[in-house]
Image (cartoon, rainbow, N blue to C red; front, side, top):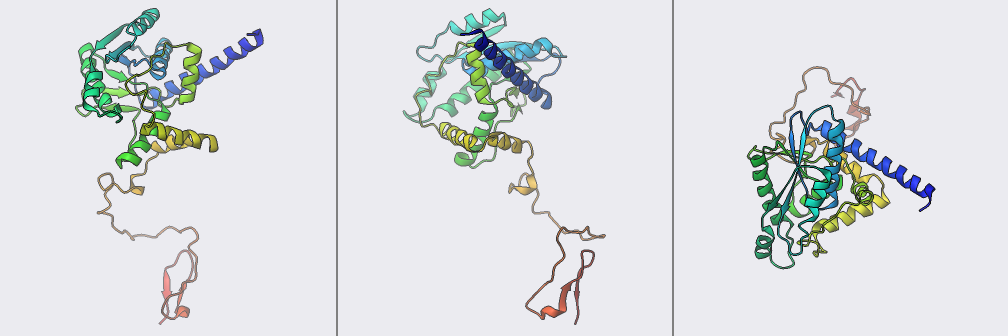
Length: 303
C-alpha cells in the first residue's frame, strides 16, 4: 500500500467514524437514551452491529458531559462450534467489564421450530427474557441493542407485509412490565456504514449458525427490496425512517389510536378562506340559479 493510499484510507475512516459518532450521539440526545449515572448493559452478540455499538458507546463515554458506565454482556446460546474465547479475549483487550451468560437456547429453538422454518422469533423471545432478568441482577438501568436504521425500516415492512401491523423498532422502549428500558443507539446509523466500520476496525465477527443457513428468510427478502430501492431511488430508506418520526394518527385508520367516532362539525365563527374555493356550481336543478359568489360568501340560491 502506497503512502497516498494509506492516507486516503485513514481519511475515509476518520470521516466514517465521525459520522457514526455523530449519528449515535444525536440518537442518544433526541430520545434521552442515556442519563447521568446510568449503567448501560451493551448486549454483544458477536456480530458487526453490536461490536460497533460497544465501540461507539465507549468512545462517547470518554467525551460525554455526563457520567455513565458500560458493561458488555454476551448470551452464549451454546450453538455448536461457537468460539467461546473470542469475546472474552476481545473484551479483556478493551479493559471493559463483561459477563458471559451460558444458556442453551439453541437446543430449545431447534427442538420447537420445524426444520426449515424461521427461528428468529422464538430465539429473540428467549434471549430477551434472559437479558431482561440479567439486567436487573447486575443493576443495569438501560439495555443497549445494536439495531440500526435499516433494521428498523425492515422491521416495519415485515410487520406490514406478514403481520398486518404498522409498527417497527422504537429507538427507546419501556418493557411491558416497566422493569427495563431498551435503547438502540445506532437507530440513526446505516448498515453500509457499519459494515465499512467493522472492516476498518477488524472486529472478530462470530457468525450465527442458528439462522445463517436460512437463505429465504422474510427479512432477507425485505432487505433486498430496500437495497434495490436505495439503488434506484437514493435516500428512500432515510425518507421511510423519517416518516416514522412524523406520524399523523388522524390520517391512518386505527380506531384505538384516534377517535374517529366522535368527530363532529363545528361551523361556528367566520370560516377561513379555502385555497382554490372559487367555482361555478352546477346541479340537477336549474344551474343558472346556483352560483358560488366568492371566497368569503356561501352559496346563494335565487328562487
